[in-house]
Length: 224
Image (cartoon, rainbow, N blue to C red):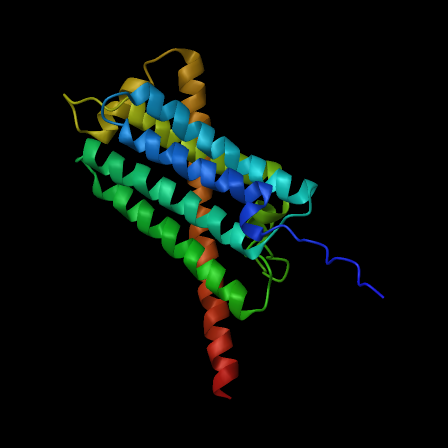
């Protein structure tokens, strides 16, 4: 008796959220290629790529196409995009440009620790923080609107600083003072993003410490 043909399965590489991830990479390449000649275009493309970061998660849940590859692709794209923008800002603001390099290091270190500690714990996602004792970290990963606010605020703040960077002044403080003299709407947006950015940095520090503790606990158990 003839066997029914085996059902073809779609390659993980061709999952809709992963295709969106490839598209984001292309957009970012174009954005950074234009960052010195057309700041407005850069800002639009960069933010659109960031917006697509939310779309791929929705498509992954909608079509049941969540994957380990997709999670890694998503995080790497996020971290590299933010790192490139922070490196760019460190060139525009030499006083103090080091702050952007420190933020870059914190962002990468925090997420790398979190990913690796999740792997050691046998979790399928670095966003699984149910067993952590920190309420702010649980709120960040457990309540999507709060997470979205912190992430969007951080990226929009960096875009604002990029757009307002002035070749005549490399002082970050002077630029911030200039922004505060703009229209009430711009000032409101700037302060709102500053609050979200500050929360994101606090969460990054907490995440790094919590993940480091998990790695140490793993080593302690293995050594017994």
